[in-house]
Length: 128
Image (tube, rainbow, N blue to C red):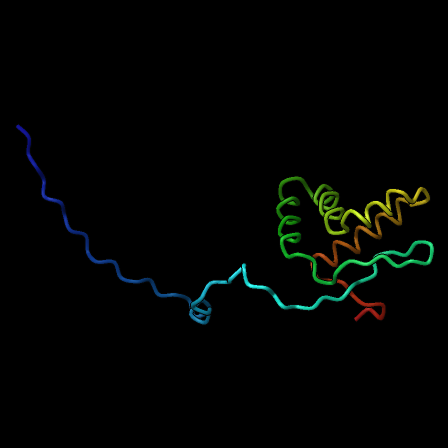
């Protein structure tokens, strides 16, 4: 003999109160498909044979996210080793790889500069 229990009704759920910081958020989500319309400047990274090689002053934000993820997973040095080539791009990487007189100190300085740019901490020549 099978007995059937009546389902108990749960009380209606009250909407949770949002913190005030969240109440100020726009109601529409961020549209990642919309063009940014932002204009970018170039920041010099290194010079070689009188030519200045630069990268954008606003690298893709996902590079910073990738770097943070890689730092957590593999450590800071590994993250830097993976992010710097991506931020420099194939042309600048080829120039550096073909420069046989590149010193470890110069490479470290270039890498640190690129990582600062990726994290929007680049400073101009006056240190501002």
